[in-house]
Length: 384
Ligand code: NDP
Image 1 (cartoon, helix red, strand yellow):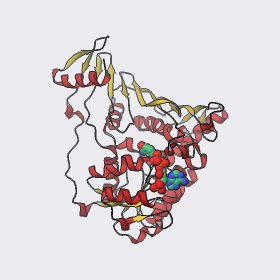
Image 2: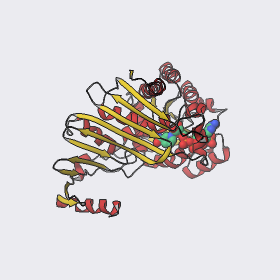
Image 3: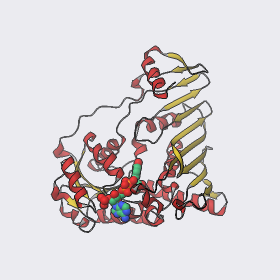
Image 4: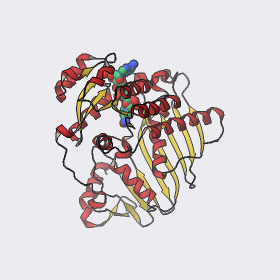
């Protein structure tokens, strides 16, 4: 049976309670939609919303982030920073951004004189995150920066210090931590509904395409910081950390890059890493730049297994709980995770609260990813 069709059929039959699915006839319980219902807040009037400047008009910015402002309730798009003036003008026209609010990388610092801009969002190649974050903070603006936070722990620390010095807020754009299916998975895992957590597995992979301009800088160590680990393995690492709610105390790892593959002259292709958490949960994680798409995690508890696949896509997530008694697919409403994430930061600024994913969260991942490299290089298990 076609997967989408079978899924729709299941959802359609939700009101009927127990139904049999698949060749194994496992009974399936569909929970009511209200299980994870979200409160519906009306949007703020545009004059009250915080003004955001987007730095770097690449694939992710133009295809996901910029369109998502239409679904924001406390944030509005007011400025662009780009090395390509014609592209910035085109997007300004499409999204109603005043052309006087278009900047380039040379006059970026003069953003300090523009009171319409409250927040800067850095969506540049990883190796440029630290410089543009620090310059943005020094211009007196609040700062959201894409993952991975920066190439090195030292750069991450300098970004945190710059935010403190400027008394401005710094958030790392970990969208999965604002996404409803991931939040539901965290709730299941941490509330004991799966029993005692034994193992988390998480895999993130895709085939790097040298013809795609967005993938070209990803093959360059200086601009990318690392390979599949820095780009997508970070999602596996994040999943293990936010599902357990703990920090790993031991790490082991293996790396393999296909010999002679020109894509992997400077950055790695495949990484497998293992984590041990203080509460006794283990994690097996992988990431790859060499195989077909995967973005999933599984949580094995003593009573039940949770599967989220895809877990970290932009939409169409699927969460399943498997128990001895059968399989559940809770109905969770898809929402625009980017809009939720952007509004979270605006709200944190308005209410003067620490955002859920501050600079320290980004630093911790960069620190752990460097220990994963070290564990692979030395072939030893590293105590964190
Ligand atoms: P792109 O290459 O598509 O975009 C990067 C943009 O940065 C370019 O279009 C360009 O914009 C600007 N830029 C400035 N200097 C350089 C340079 N030397 N080389 C290349 N680009 C430059 O990359 P992505 O949009 O895929 O990724 C950007 C960031 O977003 C990365 O940090 C990545 O990790 C993150 N990302 C996060 C995702 C998520 O789900 N959270 C998903 C995808 C990416 P311009 O022409 O306007 O100057």
